[in-house]
Amino acid sequence: MKPTVTAVVPAAGSATRMRGGDKILTPVNGLPLIGYSLSALEASPLIDEIIIAARDSDILPIAGLCKAMGFQKVSGILRGGSSRPHTVLKVLVETRADIVAIHDGARPCLSVSLCDAVIRKAIETGAAVPGLPITDTVKVTGASRIITGGADRGTLFTVQTPQCFETALIRGALAKALRDGNPVTDDSAAAEALPYPVHIVPGEARNIKVTTPDDLVFAEVFLRGDTV
Image (cartoon, rainbow, N blue to C red):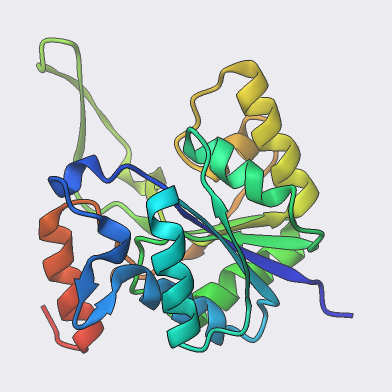
């Protein structure tokens, strides 16, 4: 039998680097940003349901968007927690799915093929994330911003979402991270701290996270199908 899969969409961040804008609902080529992320998750044949965690002020607008776009898989829109781990864990207690695919609401350029590849790897291994190898030279500095050394870029990756896990695994990992006061910056870090092996699936350069107004420009280009 096919494992059941829930997509978890954290969309409750403060968006401070967007200079006051409401990132999730910012129009991009005529559609609110989160609408693109939800469309990709809705189109995945492996995903059974979608649960969104949002700010109070965004819950009704997102509900209206889901209705207008005819999304059938969105089963709930919850109030987000005080941090990303709190937000994701709050959603995880609401699902009995075998696998969860945790995808940033602010990554609008997700392809269905990447989404499904990461889910399949998580079904196989228990934990998988998309990632891209770093191509720039990486330097290490001290507090004075003087270079103290370099890092082997051959072993370094930037990771993306969706980050996919066996539900019980990531639920326990995030709960432990919160208990221990471990300031994890993504869900993978919580699993790594157990420790549990997290596998990397080749990501996509266009799967960017919109964090600043400049990122919006690139997202608009990618979503129009233009080249840069």
